[in-house]
Image (cartoon, rainbow, N blue to C red):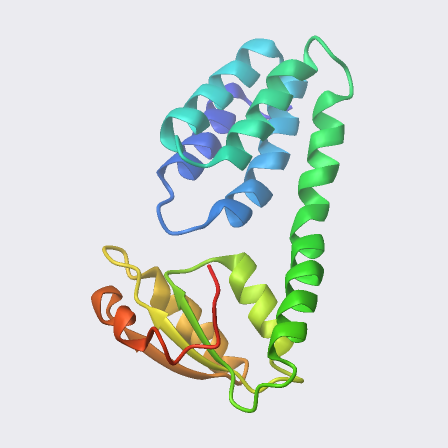
Length: 181
């Protein structure tokens, strides 16, 4: 088993990560919580507290932590939540891609507005690109400029991308086909 200090260090890295989104962090958190559960209730609580205090607005991380803490009283709780969370990105991509494909099917030059970075938005738009030529305007996501990451990824996947300041993003409202966040 991994030592408690190593588990706490992994938790601190997640809590301190201000660039990754909830889906990316959850993918790192779930194996950490599984390891913490194996180490015991005190370690699980310490890891959960660190994550929740570092990520107070990320409900999915809180849900994973709550399931891990509950695991010590209700066996199988964490496994169920983990399985759901691991399936969620693919399910979201399928559902959102299907809906966007339907919305954009008759559009000759679809224009998508988005802001910052989201691995979910990245997956959905990248899924559409082989069949729908997208023009994407992406807000840079200040103060950390996460939108640059999304813009680069979508451009590499074949989208025509405009990166703009967040404040200027509103000038594109009215010419967009959809706004995706």
